[in-house]
View 1 (cartoon, rainbow over the protein chains, first blue to last red):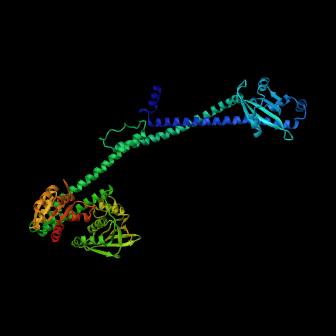
View 2: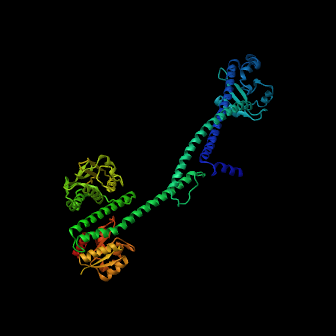
View 3: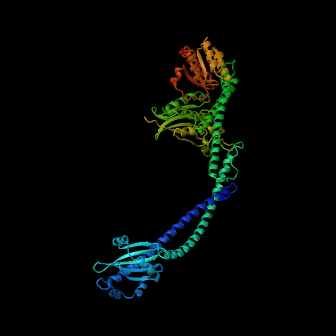
Length: 503
Length: 125
């Protein structure tokens, strides 16, 4: 047990690098696989060898029975028959094909041994086993060929192959029995097997080394990647998080270790996400009270709630009011973006007339637009057109788009609001005739927190990015798409689609 | 003089609503900082209108309505407005109407909204 523990420590202990461990593991598996393969090859060879010895026994039986068929007749005397065949020894050269064959006997139909080719020792033994047992005979009569084994042969086991011999008139002449010494077979086979095993082992060692080399390189690459993940995971966790495994990875169960680490990272990230949502919600909540004071009292003052207001004072109060509203809008957009990303923004899709949000928007902005000398035109080609989506969210998108358009449309300009059916979608348009947006800036407009740099030939529209990013997400969440078209100097048209309501 | 009860834990919101309603519209205003105070005050003064913050330290606008109905069923019909920072997504007209709630307005609330709310509530009465 101590040796086992020692080996375990040496192979799987903390001090051993991952690549060595993996290679070791591969080595063990490969060796096992190759050993099994070698065993199978030897087994197959043995079978081939045995069937070869059976084959030569069959050949002997066939040749001998053909001779007997022509030369042996039960009508003649034994002496006459023997004379017809010729000497035993002349035949034995034909008969003995290899060392493993120890005797060949012909026994006539009465059981009398008529012909023997054998070594002297075998003669005595063979005489003791001359009788065919009924079982072997029965098998001979069915198949014409049978085997039986004797365990008591002086030099080991003998397998006897028996064949029946028939004469010209289909009469049974007798049986030919060929004895094959297993010991001799196995001895010659053993020699062959040893050579084969040496060859196989040599090839195996070569294959094994090549495979281990590959395995080692693969393991090294794997170790590097796993350690990269491990380091990355550690980096993602704050320093205060519970200490995770020592770097680099080395434990016996690296994958378990790694998955535990990633789980920790996941928990940490989920926690952060949750905290972020909470923080965003708190900020938005905390903003409401001061915004209430600023917006509310600015309006209160402008209405003369605290005495007469001069036109000069009103001008500045208006600026405060408008900008606090803008700020509020920004906070609301950020909050909705955070909610959208956190999957917390709910949509309540219903079928609603496309004209509804457009009408509301036109009404909402009419006063503000008039004050800035801008006209808002509402064009409804199909009043019965219904969209399927959340009307509040569609309103929100339109609100953002019209706010942007108002900011950039010069005095005397015009904002057009439209809706029409387009290929299964309701397409909403917000079109202004302001200065437009340069092509190179357009693609980035929908990016969150995008700010136009000073070098860009565009009017300073900070905060535009977040509104458009929100619009894009709101539209996409309702299976629609949004698109902006503009040419410098020719105004901007933003259009977005919402699926048509099926009725 | 009609009385308005403001139930809100945010002093700035309370002050603003009070200023608009009393200085601007000449209504009597009573203030409560939470659900418990609000229910007690409502029972004492039997207001003509109640402005309810959605979330308070000891409960929600719904808790206030249910608590008030439990203690003083005769006040169930007093018109109420819910003032909320976030659009209530699960706003079910029927459930709120049973509690005597006329509607909701978004925070920060505007003078027009407040005046309209009061007029609507008073007109119904």
